[in-house]
Image (cartoon, rainbow, N blue to C red; front, side, top):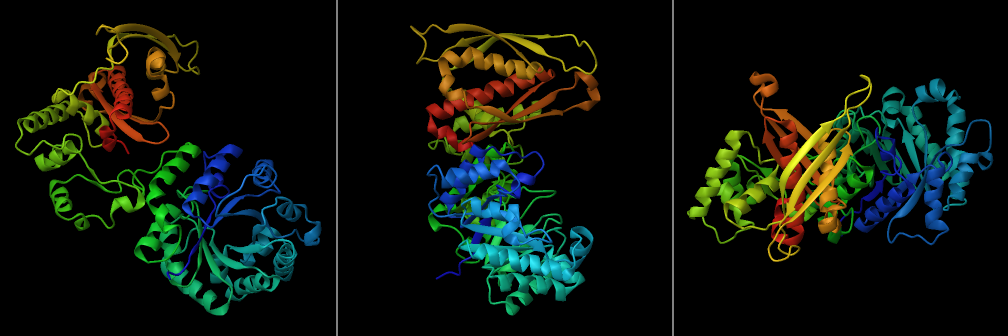
Length: 544
């Protein structure tokens, strides 16, 4: 059997310390269930002694009947305060009262931190580690010790760093976790030090790294190669400062490439979906260039690359993207060539060939559009709509009749400019209209600027027709790029909009000398693509 590496996820605790991240209790419950479904072994849910929100989360699973199928919940806390007994420390007792059944305790292993930060003697700190773990082990099934700043401590005073681990071991710790808290170590250092710890102690050793030098994933993997059997991190890598070790990269790296057992084999194909789900709950955009699960992780643009991948995907792909639930993407641009375009078109129209007359039309349309400033490699959903139009695959939904933007005068320079959008659309959906006659709808909405006002007005105009389909759509990114800056304020601009419904993510593009018109084009394409994607699943191949 493959060697087991236990996965310890700290998204709900360490991840919540990232700038811009704030989880509600319900958010934490959703993330915990998603991680549990993957087969993550431990979920560190927070510090019940310092955060009422974390205590409420634990109560959900202990008092209201909530449960996880596989993962164990971990309560996080520190060693007892100096000068008191562990049983008298309120924060330590809160770990027991959480009902978690298992805890992870952090303590100082760097002598500098003990004397200059904690203000304790070196011996007193060791007693705090030993006493806290021993007290918790009398009342909990598992207790892990996070040796904070272990690698810095080892490099400064290796004897004392090891003494902190012995104190934890003497207290009965089940796992000794070595923390690169500052994120400043290199893989060679991690390997050497972890190997020494593994040789010295018969207790399982874990690794907890931060990404301040962009090495958290590499450091975690070499720690496993050196003998560590537990990896701690956050699922999408976010955390304080530069983030934590990214488990969505570590798990497939260890399981698919190194042969370790990390999560359920059958759920590896859900890795990308879970990464996007957690990012959505956290209200942050998943890094498009993230390994394994990112939107561009298996994207190809250069013609020769795409040709090689078509002949043998292994030529430019380190794994089959389907193994982690991702998908290969051949990007659309003028450098891609006809064979690239054909593969993309055949995802929707498989009967077309390289020599089809329709392919010539599409190629010319693509070149014409890109000459005008359109860029489809980041907006393939707009490209899908243009393919439909070029091939006469009509699916009437709605069309703009007109729109007008009314901007309010600023009362002062400190106030934002509000805007009102008035628009008229013609709903031409054959499933909704009678006798083939379009329905005209006028709507008006205020917004924080013209684009927001247009977005709200369009949704209002469509709510009586497509409310179930569009109610969950929200914009996750909005980019404007000036294409010909030599023309100053008359320059043409390209607007790229990324949208999501919580499951799929898609991007659309608009180009115009008028930024509002370009924004409207991208916005209208976004809504249309979602409606078409729901109606004709073949278009889902353009959404990631």
